[in-house]
Image (cartoon, rainbow, N blue to C red; front, side):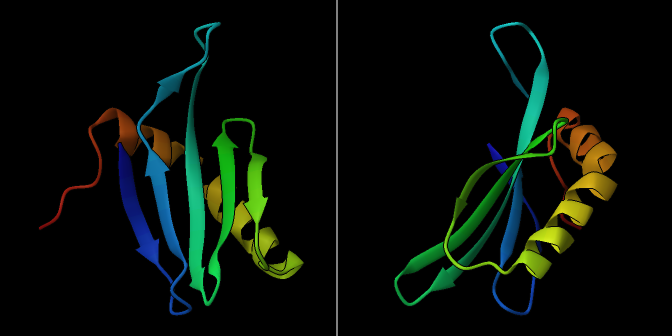
Length: 91
């Protein structure tokens, strides 16, 4: 399941997954940044806790990618904690 985190003014939507397990038992989750374009989407997907980009398509600038990486790094504990508790709850 994916959980919505934030939507930026440029329509970039940030979502994160439930916690998943690799074959070796290591826990991970993904954080996806996606913006609609005239021909599809600009997409960047990070895997945590490695912070590796596992998918990159479209036209996000290097500056945007750097900002997204900062969001992922600073928010890692939040993403894991929220995923463990079942996602963000609306008021």
